[in-house]
Length: 280
Image 1: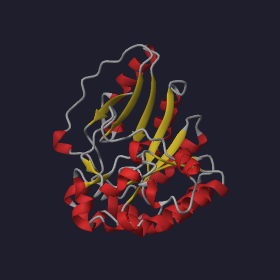
Image 2: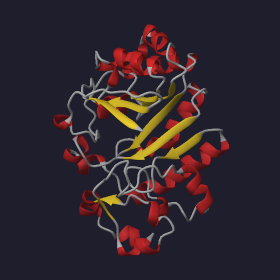
Image 3: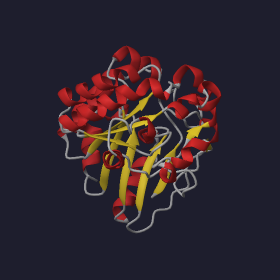
Image 4: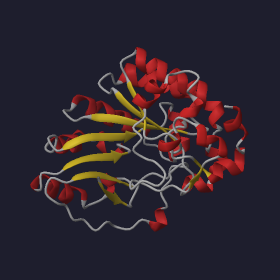
């Protein structure tokens, strides 16, 4: 899947992993029937997005769009997107807290109400919408409440991607303030998985290891088959998708998930060490 990454963003999230200084305007070339991920930054801040969507339609491309949804509070913008519903496979909303105070703190914006309106607009549309929720120190204690909020307020949203903060960009600068200890989060993540299974939600990790979630911390709660089912394994160290400069430990060699695990960032080890992996 080709990635088109627009650099401009109207947020300044304290846990953003993008190196904004390294982002440049993309050179856009779309092939017939190509699969694309449009992301950012925030793609809806780009004046080029409409022309890209029109070109995708001409080339019969299929695409996914990642967005913070702040600009989709306008019903007109959502209706415009619906023109492309046959080629947009998924709109992935980065929504990292249902609590207005926490949302404002971690995004450094006052756009919470706009995003809630956008979620209502999208829920009424014919577009396929999912949510991405990144676990950081400021929000992980409320992850189960977040799922309950989505279930109650936006019942049409059935799929949630859960990720673990990755130390790059702002997240690297704020790493000790935003990166929680994995072992502190595992019971909450377990409860999120169980709640999702019982309430018709599809909770997924993008990978074993960070920026997904280290499945070894959950194997005392769930079977290997259950864990593999909720993990896409699309990001692995050394594959062609993304090459994170993560590390693994000697004990990882005997782990069921070793071949598909992305490992953990060196910065994580610098802060917390590796004891919790040996004791897990």
